[in-house]
Length: 278
Image (cartoon, rainbow, N blue to C red):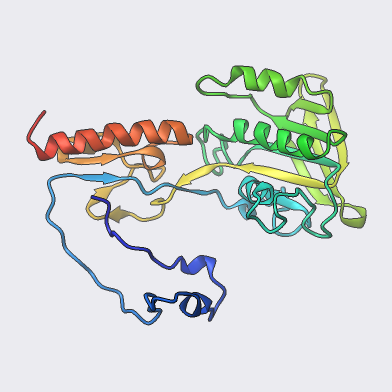
């Protein structure tokens, strides 16, 4: 079973002192004064599916996140494009709600970097290509620039990559971004390299999206429920012999489809362990 079988308050998402949910719940089911409890369960197996969190882009000091207006990360971009988001699905510049006419996507923002996350985060390339389509669907005349190290498309997504690359207003540039600073009237200045042309690139755009990598949610916790994590914070495979299974990004970087398939396999292995089947 999934545990705990109940809804919880996501405190980091709430404003300090907010209690609007209490007034909104007509059943009186929300108790913000409830004390923390510890409950012990004896089980035959455990599936760890704790998900992931985006890498903290403020650690990328040259990328301007949190200091330069209109520099956002890929999670924020996804939220902008959502019909339930703050702009009702319209992709607008955060500083002044102006429609985005030009945008830079920075791939591997924190990933494949020995100073940050040394591994590939798997989903970032496809995520940015999808976001580029979002921008062009709302404004076919928008200029989209994508800086990348390598374009990686796990699975059956090669056709999608070719489709986006064929867009006349999409500029794929192989190279790293060196610096991002504030421009005039809310614009963003991007200094980068173009490896294939052996030249420097200077762009001024309306918005920059950092394709930040994914970290396992358990990272930074030395030991969770007796589970020793690997050097990156993932649950190691060898714990399966102890009846502890991991799924999705608790195990390694993965997209939604891969995580669903992996979770199905982990659940089956947990059931087999419970039944004494090897």
